[in-house]
Image 1 (cartoon, one colour):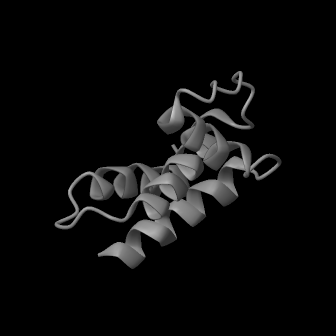
Image 2: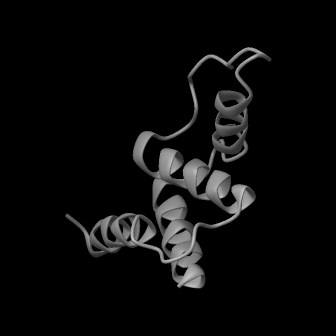
Length: 84
């Protein structure tokens, strides 16, 4: 495992241990970055209008199309560090 992947896994763990819950926009950003880093470009079907949460998550991930996994990991690490 690379140094970046190790730092990313540590940031994922830190994000689950935050003393305060981030706002929804930050949570969606973290979700999108996590999915882009771990799964790559979004190829999942877009949820319907009745699934508002699923659609917001899908949109957050889909905005990151084309971003490399390494860039997504680094941005995730930076975002979690800013929350501490």
